[in-house]
Length: 245
Image 1 (cartoon, rainbow, N blue to C red):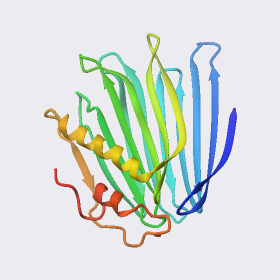
Image 2: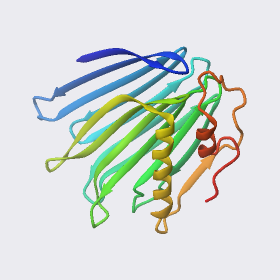
Image 3: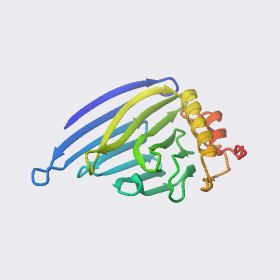
Image 4: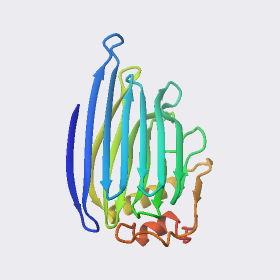
C-alpha cells in the first residue's frame, strides 16, 4: 500500500488536509487484478472520501461520501461494468442525501445511454459543495468504448479540488482504471467546463429525456467563509434562478 498526506492552502479557508492511499493485488488462482484508490479531504469538521475500486479486473466501484460533521451527509455510489451489448456501462447508481444537503441532477434514463451526466450537491450547514460528472466515448454503433472521464470537484469558495477517473477496456474481458489528482483548480474554470458539458447534453438528447431535479430554495444559512459562490448556486438552480431549458 502506498500512502501520501498533503496540506493544500486554499484562499478562503487556509489549509485543507488531503490523504491519498493506493493498493494493488492479484489473485494467484484466477490471475485477476484488483486495485483501490482512496482520497480523503479534511476541512474542519467536514470529511470527504472518494473510493475507486477495480474488482476482479472487470467491475469498478466508485463510492463518494461527504460528511459535514454536524449531522448531514451525502453519498453517491456507482458500479461500472463491461457489457457485450453496450460496452462499458454504469449499471447501478444510487444517491442518498441526509440533513442539510441540496442537490441537482441531470442524467440519462435508459439505453441508448446519454454521453454525459452531472450530479451536484451543496451542504447548507458547512458551505462546501461537490460536483460529479461522467463523460463517455462511444463508437459508430453507440457502444461505449471507455469512460473518457468521471470527475469529482470539491468546491470551496474560489477554488476547487479536482479528481479525474478514466475507465477503458483492457484485453477481451477486463477493465483498466486510471485515477488522476487531486489537483487544485479555480472554481471559475470548473463552472466553465460544466457549463459547456450541459450545453452538449442539451444538444445530444436525440429523443431521450433529460432528467433534472433540483430544490429551488437558496441555502441562506451557509457558512459563507467556506461557501460556494453565487455563480455556482445560480448554475445549479439551488437559489431559485434555474436556467431556462
